[in-house]
Image 1 (cartoon, rainbow, N blue to C red):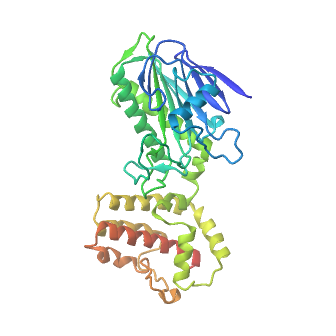
Image 2: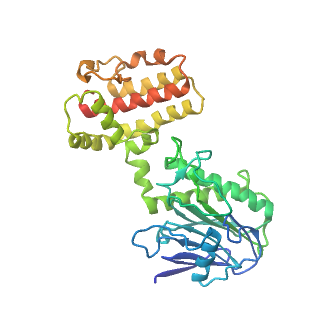
Image 3: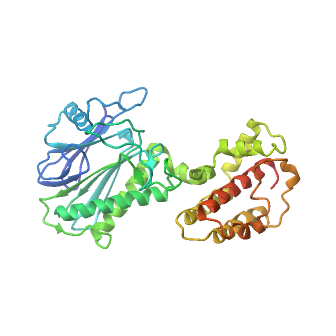
Length: 390
């Protein structure tokens, strides 16, 4: 079984294999862990781990091996040869071979982060609808998709500073997801994490350097934010190809608002299929459009207009004006004739036919109504390009 061993700046020993990452704590350490196994703030731990739940499984499904997640983690700890009373650990469906490690030295302290990440099927935004409530500690099935972060600070931090470090690390994770435009799977917002993320932060109590603040105005907070953000982004790229996700797909940038190939085809069929495109031809044209560099730049800007509406930061007519400016420029002007006679009879009007009247038409509408209307505008805008009326 391949294994890599690394001595961290704190002196702790990290061992990485396909099954798990295990860290041996080689001195006095204060550990803050979100794990249900020996979590909270501890000074009596000897090891920590991050375990790949799908290791050795052809179906790549996670399976509970005990009646509670805590007992499940104890089983994993014993499998790894660890004392279940002296270890804290996390588990994930992400592959350990894709784990990323980054470290930055400030001079009298250092920050090292190790991250594994998968967010494509379980990403969520703070405040999104939840789907289970714990009862008597009983676990429920969930979709795999977890960002686990191990952070090692080569400085001595007290309980309060560690708690503040957890806030900074969490904010850094959210910033990383924002910068790769990771969508929530449960709402139309950008993801800030997943419901199963875990974090463990280790400070070196043997260090001669004592730090009391890990907020963003401190150098420790700056380094925590920078190192964790970059490590999480690298982990997402390694595990899910998020570099391509963020950079080379127009639909992925706007899809959180319900615009995808199937919904576009349904709209096209409802309007009488102008040009009489087959499903295959429609998909081929959309695939080409999906790689259009101008549209890839336009889509997230349009999505942000919809975000501003959703957050009640602009009025409906203001958002419509911004949308018109974007779409009209790509069309060649707001008054370009859209050949409405070609769209046939449909119960659903094409809201993108006459862009020049759009702001006035949405004046006085609620932001929710305007959001749905402007989402439809972008969908019809794409259909027009696919059908060849652009």
